[in-house]
Length: 316
Image 1 (cartoon, rainbow, N blue to C red):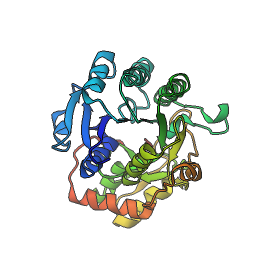
Image 2 (tube, one colour):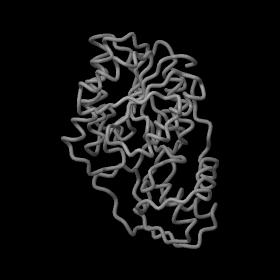
Image 3 (cartoon, rainbow, N blue to C red):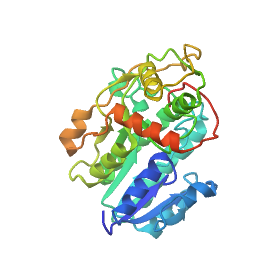
């Protein structure tokens, strides 16, 4: 990626910040698409060399202008709404996540783009055995599945070099404070009780650094246009066991209040990546195990103070 022109939408988000810093370390020429109402502190956290571009996925004109100005060789499309909002309004999800993706794909046709990497979500799968493997269980996941369908159609109709990456349970420093592991770690370090669901959901936890490396490998792998690839470890862990592990690693004094919260409506109980398929196509596998990743997050939690909202036990 050294010297290559890269456009990142959602550059100020959790994964976007990690990806942007990694590309800056690789001396890529970075163009960061920034929502006009993005908090200034998030924009200020972008690497100094990254060129900021106003980009509102609800407005095809700003999307087209961002692509025209950046003239990207690579596009990482990470921007979306509803990632940690299971109750997202369906029309908002449709407008931003689907309409914004279509606008981006349309604008990219005018540029010599080598690869467009669209970030999906594991929640598009839902129950894997249903509907040929796609069964989104909330409006966010449904909008991402629809964006995938448009991307596939663009690849078939116009040979657009798009690849879809579906990350699983991503965690790491900088994750939104109200999501699962930041909430667990904050409560553990503060000696507080932690209310949660029964915790029988099984998730494939993948550390954010592994996700970033996976995205870079997928972007650079030739001959996989149109493919959908999972970013996960291929191993699942019950939520309750992960919370208990954080308690053990921190010596927490509070109580884990298992079953204090209900499951979400239509909760999917098992999600695990097809890591072998991704490895066959790209050679990439996750390297950071759950134990090591938890220790890194706990160390980060000890070094920082977070006064964000507290909403325990919900799987994001």
